[in-house]
Length: 615
Image (cartoon, rainbow, N blue to C red; front, side, top):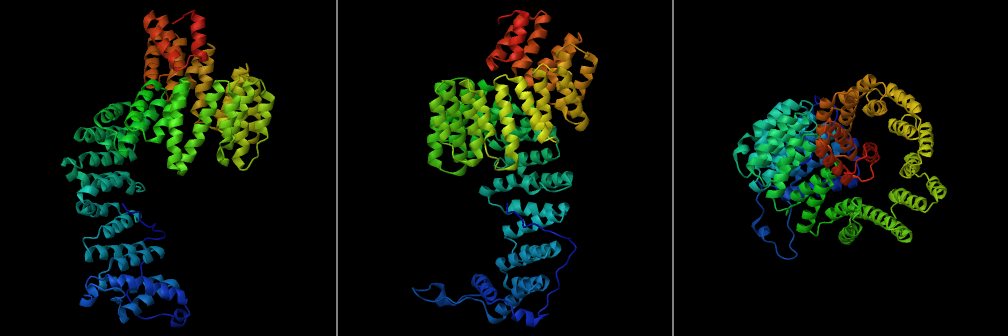
């Protein structure tokens, strides 16, 4: 749908009534000759298309070199000229009246549009609405007129009046374009304050299309998005299911289901999987569903499932670049270096062919990944050669971080840190980025004390950044300073009472050390209250319940957390609870899954070593 010009200022401001006098002739005469010429050109073209004036017969089929006269006559020219001169002279109300009157006489859509634009420029929403409604009444088949009317009503917050206009727009849209129009409805109503009223209007307007096979899936999807705008996830899920049932191969309900998955509604996942199975992945929407689903699987560390989706997508659409980049990144995480190299080479070839800005950004990511592959192969010269290809200034820091990692792997940590410190600070955020990069480098090489010190320097320079204070606290624990960690986290809680990570970290640390368990539980429960859908916080709660001896409750919580987010640390805790309960085979199964996710996870390896288990 067309995007409306923004209506600013008071909606009660009115344009002047039509008048054909000139309030200040002397000022109008002094207007620029160029402005007059521009008005003549614009309205001369408009007048040629005037529907109610017949052109001369000879002009119907002009010959070569023959001049076709405009239908613009002297009175119309004068009226339009006065209108434009008033607008340019600071009298938009008078100019609006001239132009709207001419539009009514000529029944010309260009003149109506100009009247609307003048009213909007004058910040008179009511006058703009009057012009748009005159336009729709005079030219009832104009889709543009109805869209202007709809957008102006929304800008004036008169949502209840939009229903008939929306219904007319849908009815008059061609069957081929109607689904696009339906899809645009949630975005059109996105800025409305009264979401309930907007949803009611949209549901009523889309009612007839819910029973039409060609439009039902799209209509249910738009209704679902209206529910989602109100955070009514159960209702949105029902809409997604109904849309999927109406047309299983349609990508639209699946895209809604993906949005629900991102908000924690795991029951939406079957819709996505079934759509991917029913579709042929031969449209942009199908590709978007498959890619978004693969990303969610990667984010939730379901890497094997993500790889299956990406391999299927690249097999069916080998000429699509982005899936190859995702697949290569995933293969690198799995240490499948030859496969990752092949996927990234395929991506780079396709991206170079595309040659657009998005591909340029993707190429930078591919170069970084190729450098990482070379680094894993101990081919530091090749890694540096890949980094040398990065030219974008915004990506130089990422390249230098990788160079620093190369130096550190060669035993040159002081040189690596100096490299990061020497980077110029082109933007205010570069200073922070440099310190975080140095701290992360030290973390990667388990230099906990030094990382703690660098985070301390970052906090001193950026004291209002909660994330930096939290990271400093985490490094304090790693550096063997639990008392410092507690002081830092309590200070962070005092400064930001809604920072759930701080409650969780302090509670988990106490539980893991088997200290002050009732207090640890209270802290973690506060974190759960602030972030109820976080699987890692649920893991902490399960762990403190286990430490308190509530094994059955711990098992229930940990199983739910692991089901929501398969993670090696959650697997370590869940496996230990199962082991203690005597469910040894199930524990071994969970631990093996955790090792497949991350074989070197410290918590998992520590658990297996402590229990003397080799799964």
